[in-house]
Length: 283
Image (cartoon, rainbow, N blue to C red; front, side):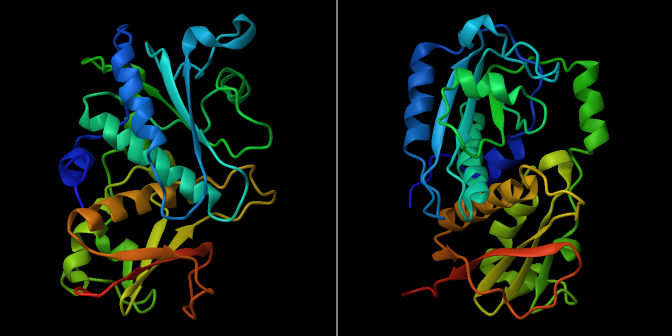
């Protein structure tokens, strides 16, 4: 299939931008962005909705806030879905596809999960009640010189560091690392997944290859009280987006399915979420 942007080039170009030029996004670009978002479909068959807001458009004169994390941006995108199985994964997939598209067009973006005023953005974006709404992103033109806060945030999160293959990808069980030779044609989709962003760069994805199927697991820390949003599931959706777009670019067919939990002994705090079942070439 024809892709909207080159995957490897765009994935490597994408980074979190926290400082923006005070230059508004032109109306024609907004129309193009919003039209693209409206056409995005996720492979989990979960209906998602994109929402856009201008900083000046907050209801009641309330200022849309990002707690000082973002500077200069006035145009934001968010995505929501009704609570359902794989809803958070679908949100992560859909939002990341739009952010990659924006990267390919020269815009800066930044995933924001815990550092935005959820109530104010929900009102400004006119979200229906009881929706999953885990994240937003600014959209704008990057400021060339990073603030000290930006550099510190990247340093603390080790934003440029990625875990090695042998800690992320496995063959048949979690005891045998998957090599790039073992992965064959899927070495490229797996590498694009490895480079995906995640909350505080935790990189929670773990994959086990079993015959022609890749099982996607998430490292989800146990907590005394369950969080409102398991952000690691959003991260798995982001990773699935990179994997899927890369597979499509290389002409690799298959589908995401949620199978009965595989008979694979998983490490503690590692949860099965879904699988990619590859379709053999020529079928």
